[in-house]
Length: 348
Image 1 (spheres, helix red, strand yellow):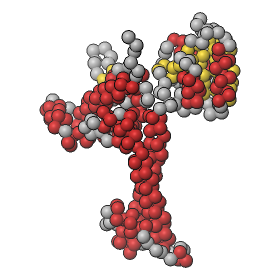
Image 2 (cartoon, rainbow, N blue to C red; image 1 turned 60 degrees about the vertical axis):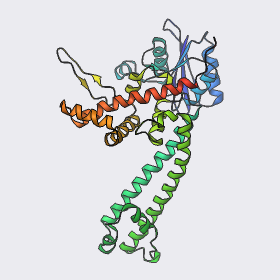
Image 3 (tube, rainbow, N blue to C red; image 1 turned 90 degrees about the vertical axis):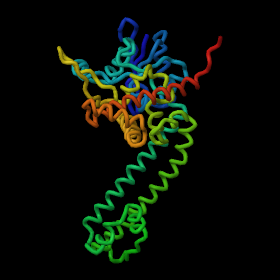
């Protein structure tokens, strides 16, 4: 038999289906260690458990996925069912659990989940904190400049021409009289000082995280950092996108599709064409774009390619899309070669 699990924050609903497609039962379990073990015992109670399909192994199903992996249970990650199927069947937790079981049985819209117990998972957690800090710092800087636009003229004239680094320093070092907070000019100075000091604190936080992220990326895959145009931040994103078990990606075309840089066929009749792929991991797509932009200014091979394709009539966005596809191939080779080195050698 085959199991399917619909994951939620507080409960998981499991369904069991035999190899003929008949539903054997469904049940709900809490999302804790005891609940995961009870879910697995319940599935095994129906017979030989061949495979389990789980929705959301990277989010609400992460804990269950770790238990199944530790118990040696074959598992696949299942995409959400298409909207047409959901409209016909309706929606409930047992129905939603039955869908991944049937998908796992037919091996439709399934894939191997990422491992969540290695250094890449540690890297992902640190990058979440860094990305949040970078976003907040950018918001703070925009708020400072917005306040300067509407500040009294004397304060605006003093600050508007300053470069960003000096602007943060001047605003953070101000000593406005708090007793005059009812005055617009004084209140603006107080607000600017508060935002500038927040900006400084976030910069310190980002620097602290970078001290951890750089060596960690180098330990996981130094070959990725050796590629032109790839630094610790971009390399970290590529590692997180591929996961600890990068060998789950069957080929470089699958990795390109994952990153949203594989053109999609859009042919009909006598018309043969491809359209832009707007799916995939957009953070990985952005990382590939940054690699290409860096190479366009520093890499002779890339410059020669741009000149040749421009002479053929391609526009700059079209050339960048082609380059992202080529870079995805290089990144995939670096990821999978490191993954192959980590695999234990087979016995003779």
